[in-house]
Amino acid sequence: MKVEREPALAYGVLGLPLAFAALPIYVHAPKLYADGLGLPLAAVGAVLLAVRVVDAITDPLIGWASDRFVARRAWIFAALPPLAAGFLALFGPPQDAGLAWLAVSLLLVTFGYSLATINYAAWGAELAHTPDARTRLVASREGFALAGVVLAAALPSLLGKDSVGGAAQLGWVFLVVLALGAGLTLYFAPAAAKTAGSAVTLRSALRDALACRSFVRLLVVFAANGIAAAIPAATVLFFVSDVLQAESAAGLFLALYFLAGAASMPLWVRCATALGKLRAWLIGMLLAMAVFAWAGTLGAGDVGRFALICVLSGVALGADLALPAAMLADLLARERSAGPRAGAWFGWWNLVAKANLALAAGLALPLLDRLGYAPGTRDADALAALAGVYALLPVALKALAATLLWCCRRDLVVEEERPCAGC
Image (tube, rainbow, N blue to C red; front, side):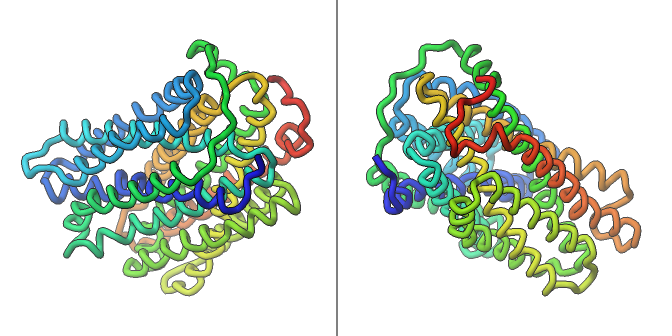
């Protein structure tokens, strides 16, 4: 069955509510529980970190279980109740809610989110039968996901008098968005070819995934590139506030970034068709390096230039979102004869994606402190350190990722359908 544009659109819709769910957990929830309920900020942060560790560890386990009983729609449907209930509890806590309420609601929503996203990604990998079709499916999913991020970022200020009051209304909006998105995808998106479940043990499934040299190499490139992309995300508000001295424009900058990423998806699909996914992704990396090198030269008042940088870096983000997962789907297509592996592979993929965010914050923020930067400073050396961490450190990591990608190109270019080396 050939996947055309309309099925790709139907498949992609679910990406919007899933992305909508992800952003508020780490952006709005800390402020809601610290400012709105008066819980200690350090304790809230500790709960968030602990749940994130549990969440990352369980991803490969969810992937293995999903491959044992290959029913992607059923798994996604089963994920919806805990995802919805956890999100509603997280953003609608009673006034006497404490850390236990926060922890349990977070565990519910992250479990539902992981169960849904792993099977959603595996469904897309199993659904398409050509490299171009796989690129269209991933681009559709990630384009809707960026729309979900923009929606989740904008709504709290529109729903309430302040961000805390607005965040408390997110749960009910999310229920509607989730019902619509899940309903459209589960009803209209085509089913993948039926596959018998995998009878391998958990240990064998996780080991077999890492025994594939091509998969491991792609995972390493994905990790290096992901950390490079996550460092600016962890430091951009400091950069805008203290280097550009334009804190009031932060929302505009973020909107430009994500909207440019969503708008660039068709461009990267065409580029991948013309040049191949690997070369297209490499072009995206080189664009990001050039843009962030330019960002490192900016100073106070350079609002217009940074707005252009946000647009260009958003275009580069489109490549990061659309192409690596499509390359992973191509690798999985080689291995269909060996039984279902998509769940296990995307379990590892999700673990690395979540680790990237934690490593980026764990690397960038202590480094800034060590270099003498503190929020609100106007010291020239401290601001130069902030600019270097925000802009130049990602350039170095992107250069590493691009070098690794090019060196591994023979293993990762899969359009020629060569056997998977080392599998």
